[in-house]
Length: 355
Ligand SMILES: *Cc1c(COP(=O)(O)O)cnc(C)c1O
Image (cartoon, rainbow, N blue to C red; front, side, top):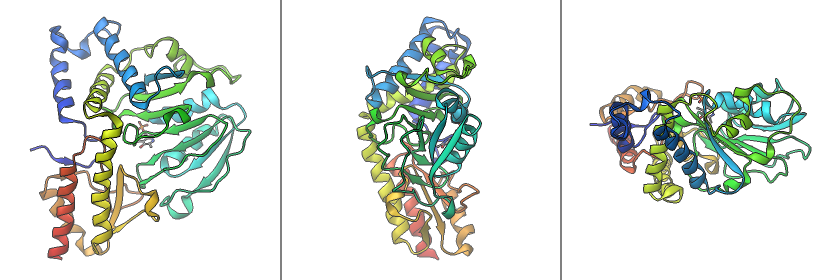
């Protein structure tokens, strides 16, 4: 039986998507050829790319609003520097809420001045800073909407006249937001969309072309836009699986419908963390808790071995916390079912009964 996969990333994908993808690897659309052995310029693949780009914009409600969706390579980590390469002329403002924000800031500093408007580093990133000011004369403001490692999530984004840039790698397509407030969104596929190897970038075209530096072609968003996200060979398999996942999401009723289930999953696990005396949540304020990644620890270290054996026996995978936080992390991306979360909660309750 398939495991209950709580892995943080790469992570669970819908089973129906994996079935379709494996079929396409052997024989894509009855061409008697594999998806991965046809030209990326062939009609069937161009259609895949166009459909994936269109579905991404459709889910975010950004069609016909001056946005372009691109499927690039290099992971979200390459976007840390591509964003700065394309947008940073003088200075940019960054909110530091964790490991990924810190890495984005490090890259941006290679291109200009970085103003860290606030940071939660003083408490090992267990909260989301609030009441900070974004200076008005910055080239853009950058934030990370969901902090995959620490289990915090932004619920409010600042009102600013500067372009709003957001790393949504681990919560894109999981909840409704007014996405038109954002000027550039990026997300590595492997958290909520597909296999590793492609990164979705959704960018408002009007913010581009404003820096004076020369930009190498592969790092230039405009080049990728002009070439319809096919400037060079895209990662065809990752784009195809992402397209299938976006189609699956549409069948589920889109972000609106999946958000309801995501809320139920998050309530289920957090209620148990709060109720069960053997567990303690990592995040300081309840309103900052991530609905995608729930971080928690055991209150007594001598229970670790027993708990670990119990959840593994129950068919759970990937529950260990990131090394910088320790404890446990239940990642509950779109494809994880409410039933899987119930299995985890049952194990937590069983531990309480036996301890
Ligand atoms: C995983 C992750 C990244 C890094 O993604 P790569 O594709 O491995 O470069 C960046 N930001 C966030 C929020 C992440 O969760």
